[in-house]
Length: 186
Image: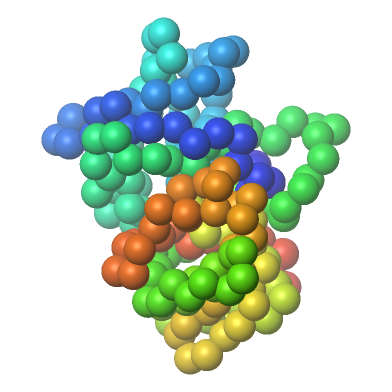
């Protein structure tokens, strides 16, 4: 379980490729094999650590259902370690189980921030509501608007500077996870 509050932006050192192993640069000093880390919102298990690097084995299902198989070397990734009992939940409860991939359709400057519009799969629409929570690339965000199969979110400068969303462009894919509470209330 995670909170959607990104702790670090890591970098892709080696892509998953045919071996299905993703290697990331990270500054987590105490990261150990066996721990869960959300990578762009996807819950993964650390398979190995070595001098600022963390390796993750990706299943064929993970490669198919998420954008992790299309990462390029040097690209930034959002990282969050698993929630510990007693920690604050600054965002919302995030499982790391991706519900679908979205596509950025528009990015509009709004004062110091940006509004991002994302096309999402029709099957998750019933779990989305204006002012409800959604995790995009693992980031806990509030749905600012809904129109058809498009949602919009407002990104403040802090989010743009401390996550990989500041580098995303129109046409980029993003991992989406609906609010777990909305899922179980439907």
